[in-house]
Amino acid sequence: MSRAALEATGAEFAVELQEVNRLCELQAYDPMPVPSVSVRADIIAYASPDSTFAVTKKLFDAATKSILIGIYDFTAPHMRQLVLDAMARGVKVSLMLDIDSADESRIFDDLIQMGVTGVPAPSCANDTVHVFASSHEKVIIIDDE
Image 1 (tube, rainbow, N blue to C red):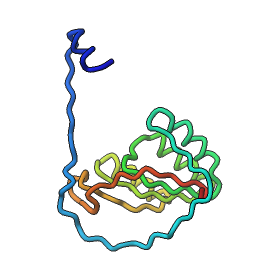
Image 2: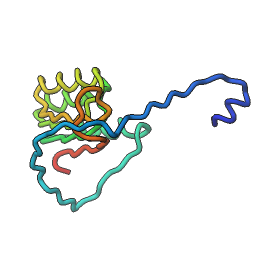
Image 3: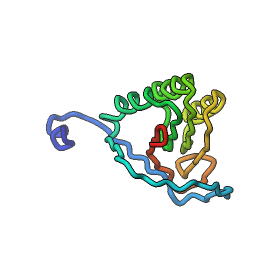
């Protein structure tokens, strides 16, 4: 229902929009070598949140070698469990995460302790550490595909 339609019903609502300051002072970091990637196959793209979990679960459950995740928001317990289930099958998991909350810090640290190879990528959305002005990646590569 549109905002105008809601207002016509007399319903009261509030919308809070919080924007991230992308002009924060960035801290120095040591650049890491990133291997080049050549794609010679189809790429599967889905729109979040409507279709992503069912597809992600299916792909994670089928992983046999590796899962590489680059993401800016990782707090869902069911996603954490998918990672742990894959690791229990011997799948190597790597995670680059824009850590901007206590919840993300906890899950990131927990996954590192469980064996995930992790790289923090804090942006201006983080209250204390700013390596990137914006870290808004959304990518998962499974078994090098």
